Length: 112
Image 1: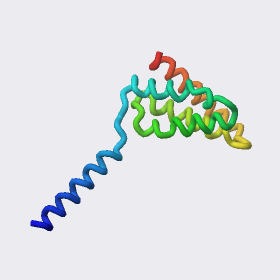
Image 2: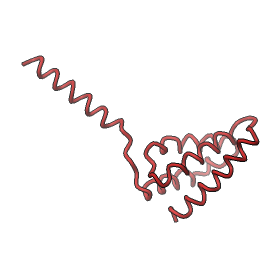
Image 3: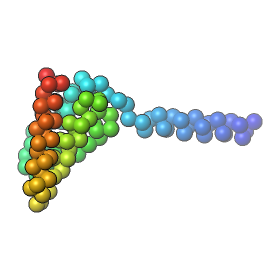
Image 4: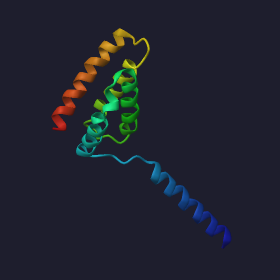
C-alpha cells in the first residue's frame, strides 16, 4: 500500500509540474495587450540598451503568442537583438528591418 501511494503521489507531482510548465496559448487580443504593455514602456526605446530591454521583455511571449502574431513577435525580437549589437551586420539588419516593418503592419492591423 505504501509503494502504491508513493507511486501515485510521484505520478501526480510529475503531471502537475508538466502542466505548469506548458505555456498557455494566448488569443490574438491577449497577445496584443501584452505587446502593447511592453512597447509602451519608455525604457524599451532608448538606444541599444532599450533594444535589449525590448527583446528580453518580448522573448517570453513568443512561446504563448497567438498564431497570427507569433511571427511578428519573433521578427521584432530578432530585429531588436541585431540592432542592440555593438556592430550589427548591416545586410542582416536590412533583411530584419523589412521583417520588422511587416510585423509592425501586422500588429497595427490586428491590434487596433
